Amino acid sequence: MQRITEDKFVEDINQNIGIIHKICNIYFVDADDRKDACQEMLYQLWRSYPGFKGTSKFSTWMYKVALNTAITYSKKGNREVPTDMQAGNWEQLAAGNEQQHINERLALLYAAINTLSVTDKAITLLYLEDNSYDEIAEITGLTKTNISVRLVRIKKALKEKLKNII
Amino acid sequence: METLDEAKNLWQNTNQQTNQPALDKAEVENIIKLRIKKEKKNAAEYFLLSFAYQILIYAFASHLVIKYWGDNRIMLPSLTGILLYIPLTFILMRKFKAMFNLPAQQAINLQSDVKNQYTLLSQFFNFKKRFDVLSLPLTSAILTGIIFMLYVPGGVEAHLAGAVTVCVGMLLVYGIAAWFENKKHFIHPLNRLKFILEDIGQVN
Image (cartoon, rainbow over the protein chains, first blue to last red):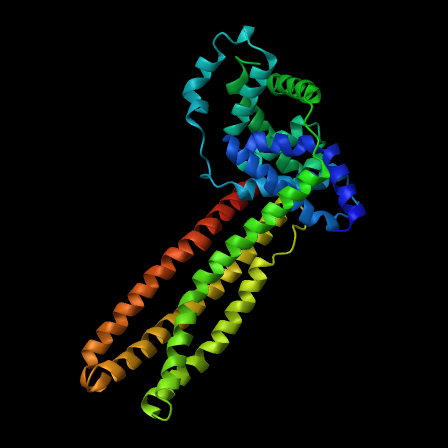
């Protein structure tokens, strides 16, 4: 990549660096896996950057590449959920939560999202990031109807887990 | 649905407050260099594993051609082995190159990109299965023939049952090795991609 393009790439990435961190936090529980995945995303973004023509928002393009990397890069099992995030522990986690710091609630939200399937995680993240249904459809390749149906299901599933926490 | 909307508020408030450290150019360059190095290392490892036994075949056959130059009983099967293997190696190398010089992600959308990855990997796997079906029996047969010709008095004709046993044994060993290799490099990754595709395509 040419020097000017490299500078532009770093600048564009830095303006949207939160996307990489949020996706890594949602898809990877282990700190080492997370670090490794963040680097892999950066590498895939760098490889794909010459193909970015600016026809869509940079953040939309970045979501596509980073999410694709996250869901295909995971070395773990398909539906593996860390033991401390399994259903039986939710009430325990919620107990005494009123006094906990807001970051702990955020951590619990991450944990709840972590129990979803790979695609539902992507849809949830995009929804929480306030992307429109059109944007979610563009990023995932699903129809708006499909996204709508899945969001209803996701809301129901998360509601069960979050009702005593948030 | 109030809960997820509350979660959305929490998410946006807290994430806006979080300042992620910016990357500097040197850091980005360093990460990219490391990833390229890692990718090359992985490709080289797979390359060596895939070609190690073919290199052995070529080395062994070439050695026999030179050593038994003029002795058609040994020289001709060895040359036949080399000639039969050259196109197979050539095709494998071309496929291998295509496999490891993957184009950058097209970033069409998640569904299409995962589907493309699945198609590419399964195409290579289908080719490799056909390659294995052709090359493994061929290798076993040629090696058995040459070994019996060189080291067993009377050759294959005098010890047909023994030769068949050795050939089948060799085929079994190669087959097991290929099965493990396929499982690690193709079956597991393809299953995972298939699962993701099913998950993306799931409507209800």
